[in-house]
Length: 204
Image (cartoon, rainbow, N blue to C red):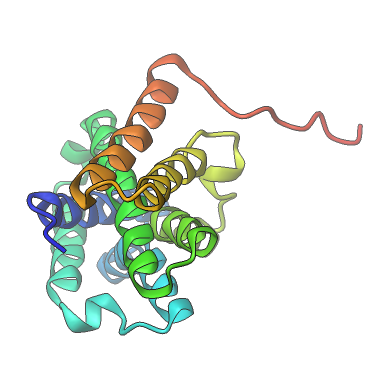
């Protein structure tokens, strides 16, 4: 599978996800060990669960560079947390890129292994969002995707577009970039215009 520039986007996505995790650790006044743990959970948690569920070797054990990147992001955030926090809005945009890349690569890895459209879409979403959910649960917060944010929805769209392109026998590169573009476009639109999913009015 020739992914071109996408592996570099994948590594950048890991770095940004790790930074987002470390920023949550900063809000919780954790020590440097807490920073590294929360950063690692955020960056590789979704991909780890995907690989375990599909029966594949866990990706960061095969390629420890992902762990190195996560730890580096955690330490840099710990040292320069105030500076990084001021650029948090920019990080959200990089996070959107990471989301788009992760959901499509997760779906691609699963589709190549199982050939199942439904399972591949599910694994794409898990790859993109489960790390953040694990981070929030560990930090005793309600996961972001349950606040009405169009986040998991964007991952679902990207994974679905990729799988549909594969089912239509479109070239791999077109399928990858179509999925990434759709996921990023939806997430970006939600950020720019404040789109959100409808919330329950509760029982009261």
